[in-house]
Length: 393
Image (cartoon, rainbow, N blue to C red; front, side):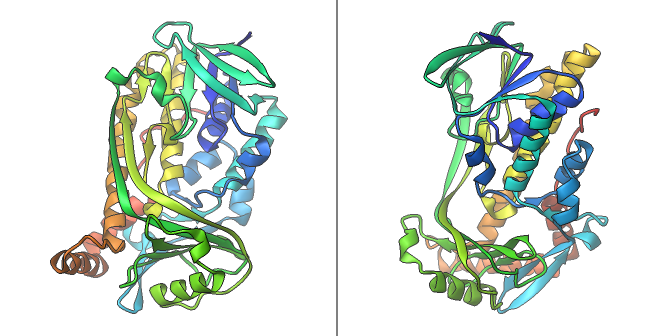
């Protein structure tokens, strides 16, 4: 049997960052992860960081490679009616910016920091049950190397994603979920090809949505809208490149495709995010469609508030922030869910829509591109709503 102060389930960016922040204040934690370290470090996920996320990573000292190799962006381009229309974040949102830096790189840096700091991370540990979360002595039961183990703790942080066990440990009668599944998916590729545009391109076209993003000056991350029942094998590399060219109006730089997958689209929120001694963060409690690049950023904002609350508890003897965590974090989450839903609805082609609804959608895009007030609102949300509190580290 093991004991720790905070048991963290999940070694994604949320769990790893939470544990690292706690370490900086001398608060012990143990991380349980169902996959191997190699798997965690190779998962292709998000890549656009809000200003607040960049600030948090710098504050936590997870910024050396990001600041050296990441790609700062001061705006985005919207492809519409055959032209690119820039929206300047710098102009419309007080000089703020976003950073193109892959989630995989953040995870690699955090694993390296934990290895240097001696944090206990138990990989390939299948969590099977959370016990006594309504008491002062919760425990996590997990299987590792063929043995069933027990980890006792003061608190449990569920950072184990949408398919994890943490959310389901809250009694069903106490939980409420809101779920919206979209009638389209994204076919995404990672390619060893320089990005064709200096900033992200969001494209609306008669064929559907497309996105040009990047991971580095030599690696492009690209997406096109497809039907939910489509298959990767239906799309050759050249068919993808041609679709991107047509939908964005920009000729993409070709290169070897190193990853190809279809991602379904959904919006999801589960409440509450705290129950007894269990606290949820990241995808364990909420999912956003990737259109607004908010998933990783929401997780970092959650961890910022949760780590600050744990620090208040352990270092200052103040219980109030832990009790307010769920209420505080959900206010921001629902605003970000709104922006992600709104941006998805704005730019994708929904085959269920009538001609009238399609014309209204085009009017919405036209308004965004020709109104300073609309651009300012988009820039504020895209660069990231303020994080309520950064931890004292």
